[in-house]
Length: 120
Image: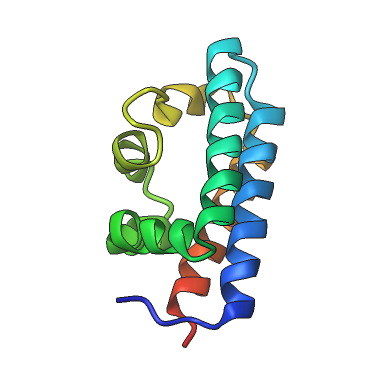
């Protein structure tokens, strides 16, 4: 079980919404943009119901693949497709349409999420 501070939970929730808004801004595919908007709303609603729910889900489903995130291994996007996007959004297929500096920003966000989960 993840045991992080209230401040880190709030930071995680803030950054995950910021991350999805960033994705929504840089992705050109209309279907993907709409899915991302849906996930932003789900995240906002989920965090209102249970402030720790989003960070717990990340920790349970995504954090076990933290080495792939730290190594910027694009195979981690297969995990995201399943656990973050309900098999409805394939970031790996969209990766080739994303500019290099935006890819770097995506990796930075993901590494921040891992670091927050590692804070005690």
